[in-house]
Image 1 (tube, rainbow, N blue to C red):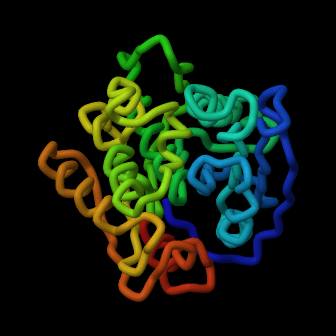
Image 2: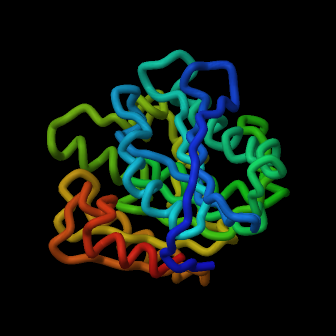
Length: 265
């Protein structure tokens, strides 16, 4: 599905997929006559409302001239009404489902959808991969109706319990607790339903993990351990560990890290 960089003009539009002010996405579409593959982008920021989708603008602007339509989504986060459990989860599902309404007008090829997420967005991207099975039904989350071809996790939080433990060891209050609504000991069932590490049996789509060795926000061990367990369960997964790359350099389109990511498309 990789496309070559070309002189493709594009345009962008902000579109709401819900009534809350944070339920919107920015769609960038190449100006060509063909139906474009779609890259859904989920930003990070430990699920907190003080961070937003603007961090993904540079990579969205890089991908569109390559021939991809990009759907850079916003969602309700911790600190906003409805954010966290379970609103954030349903928002990312609803935002992808909304592509069905945009398919014809913007010539989107929904048979070729990649979800790419950074940091906490990587967590949400991997979690979405567990929702592609039609038999997955827990009564808490909306049904995902748009098929996902591949998920790319950039320094993603693959294991919520492990991330919570890392924060505890550092003597800080973990944003994971705010997101889920409590600690792993208090709400073990929620962690099982929300953590990609716990949801591996439901993963059927290809997963790509990219992580920098110098990451101090989300340690690379999370991707390494997730990769090992994914292989044990014979799932489709690739891991790229990048030396001399820290947490935010991985989403810098001018860095060598970005070329590694593009090559996985």
